[in-house]
Figure 1 (cartoon, rainbow, N blue to C red):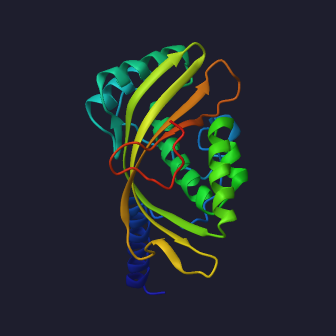
Figure 2: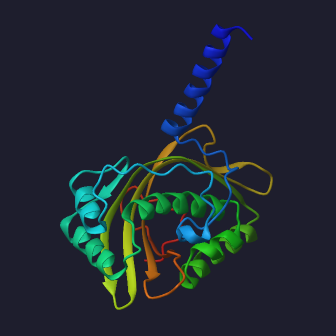
Length: 239
């Protein structure tokens, strides 16, 4: 192959990789996993390490994140910042960047699994009370013989609005702003709500929780909230 064609091929490959990283396109082929599992329970052999622009210490990392949002996520207020620091002091394994990246993965997986529906995935990501509400909504939809398809195109913002310790339980509330398409069809395939060709901005406020004394590193969804302007009304409100 001529040298100039080799150069062009390398440039083209580099552009594809760059576009995928910038656009964050999800094709539904990613391996499903609990994004809050500890690194010792996941295979990161194919993942490149995240280069941190913040100090290595967990408390300093949280303070720096609160002062300047990283990528599309950050900390909304001083009370939330102090709550995160309390969690980091009590749980030496806590990493705010890992949590924020994982929470966005979990958000997309839960929303899309609720639409499919994929109850097995939901059961692994939701605490029992929230799972019961999601399962009831799925069964009611099936009773009406309706189907739903939801695709998350991008999570534009994820902001920690609250964080607290209650005994051995840590809770972190995240306000998500996402671009998605959702379509609900009746038993004949006719569209009831939504538009497959229209991307809309939806918002969700979710609270994740974890027993920091447990050897299980998983964070689960403990609460969904839908009582504010612009909220995603298709997601059950467990607030």
